[in-house]
Length: 243
Image 1: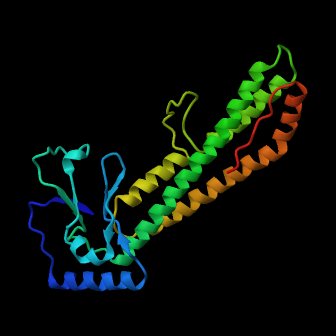
Image 2: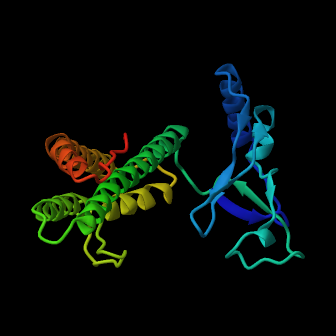
Image 3: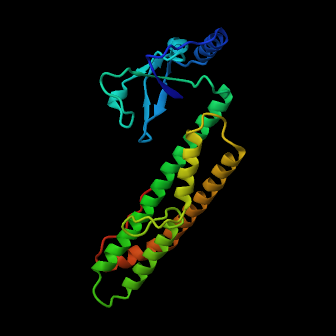
């Protein structure tokens, strides 16, 4: 979608108007009541409005306006025209192409959320292990076990994110960096994603599933014994967040 000033004259051909009306009727027949024209701002945040489906043909000609002066990065002031969001008239992508792009974008967004949740689980357990190790008396034989367990969890985390302790970027590319790059490539192109992008999505998903499975297996194998040892020393057990 492109943003254009309302000062520009927006015209549509008879063929495009007929196509818009046909699309509107199809949406109504499918039970759609509202539409959400949107664009992504310079911060990657979607800006949108809710429009009744009966206004579809007008929406496609740019009837829904956004105040550019209220948005960062556009260089507009209060005196400037508002912006309309409408399809790029030069684009040749079909509705099926756009739907494929939208569906893959939603899937990748969900994968990013799942990946962040997995990293949070690993960090919670790793930091808890370090905390309990620091509370043990000098020479306690459990301390090396906790330190080793923390290192094992961190090794799994590093397969997902390319960061060091404290959040410094290492410059390496891990699963998260690859997924974020793929997501950006898909959302900033309105047409059908390439076969390589679909293939890459599947590969990243399988790799993430393998890492999560390995982490869950580690929890089942190691954490019960560690928590038993902690309880015997009157230390709180390490809780596990449910994914």
